[in-house]
Amino acid sequence: MDIRQLRYFVGVVEAGSFTKAAATLNVAQSALSLHVRQLEEGFGTQLLVRDRTGVSVTASGDKLLERARIILKEIQLTEAELTNSVAAPSGEVTIGIPSGAARVLSGPLLESVRSELPRISLKMIEGMTGPLEEWMAAGRFNLAVLYRTAESVGQMTVLAREEFCLVVPPGEPPFEDSIPLADLHAFPLAVPMRNNNVRRSVADVVAQHGCVLDVRFEVDSLSTIINMVMEGKAYSILTPSAIQKEASQGQVRTVKIIDPVITRSVVLAVNPKDDRSPAVSAVRKLIPKVVRTLIESRHWSATAPDRV
Image (cartoon, rainbow, N blue to C red; front, side, top):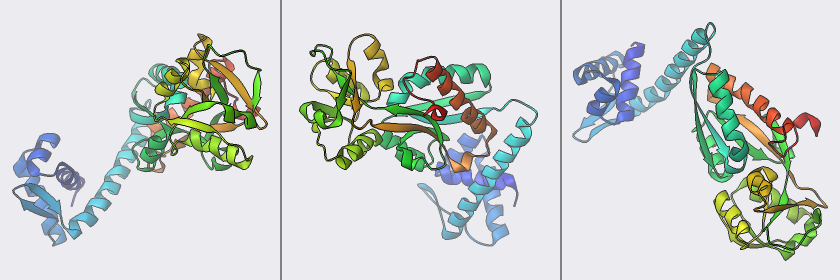
């Protein structure tokens, strides 16, 4: 058994057939068949079932597939560590970012990676927090910016802390600078879906204080929620970063929520499997610097973690 045989075996399984694997790996189909057959002879057991529709793994093949992926991942990490010990980190890094944070972070982060880590290709996926949490748990991302309450941060890196506010249509009569949580029941709200971390953060505090909210619309789209507020169809509860552009242009207004103030932490999570990757590590170290610069320059209405 050698590394090439393992790569070919994994490639055939993932492609679903020798024909597709040959095209993907740029290897002759006869060579792939030979290497897989040599693996089977070496282990003394059948690894693949071949038929007209393609291939499927046997029980033995499934065990080898699991181990082979681990071995190949370790080899990839070792190669990257040795290569990057004498050169700038390189490779692709995938990061998930919630829609609210993306509105202030995406552009500056992409620019910082381009200028400071030119050999890294950053793949950014934006979405609502519910799906992002699921995709991160499934290993789809190397890194993810997520939202947490102070009690659930765990080992993740805290990037910033934000306060929620009531988002008001521009044509409403003047408001005070702040509004008690208990008074929010008077406003018809458009809010994210129940599996959204933003929604849960607010709902937990509301329940703890025996308050109620008038939720009229549950929407799995930040842009739609903001448009509904701008058009005077609803109010919402968001953080200033999510509507910073619209607020600066007078398209919406914000009112601070008090008694109590509702806060959340913006955190950075890393996929444990990618913790040793030099490229992931480089981006992981860069993100807190970018966030701090945005906060200090007042481009992100949040508080740095060491200033809370």
